[in-house]
Image 1: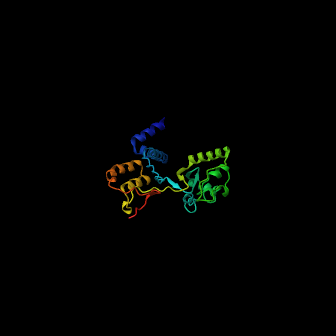
Image 2: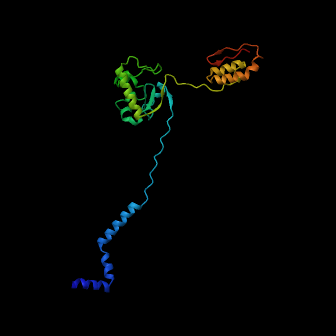
Image 3: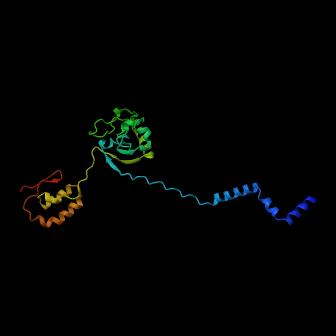
Length: 232
């Protein structure tokens, strides 16, 4: 008790001793840990980076010739067709790209090969100018296997187009009438045959009906949707 009383008396007589006793290495370490923990919880979170937007995919109509370059060699993308739909399988390049087990299907119609479970080139259509493979001769088991492949592609890959024997060519909406010396009747019928629709042809006929009676000549013949030049 005498020692405790003496120590209390010393601290009361000299306050600097108490302040010095608080600045021990242990107390400094504990204070540093407390400040660091407080800063960790209270500091603002770093902004989350926004990933770049994926490039837009344009739905296209492919022919066997235009699909062929998408084999991972001629073009970096890898496409293949399954029952008329073209899938972008670039994400599975290790399987469908050069050197992969399904590399023969890259840039081609893989429907028959997938249905038959064969990766041989005999499963591919040899004549790129010929008709598309209608999968004739396949049994129910093979068609069921093909549907399984198709569902798998739908889950993993994007459809970027369709496969067609011939690329569709849209005829122009306007025709250069100065090239042809034709009657208004031929102009209206030429518009209808050009694929602009019955409404456009009907509107044109309605507009030109008052002028048709002034023509005594018969309407010139129309061949393959193109107005033939009338003899002068």
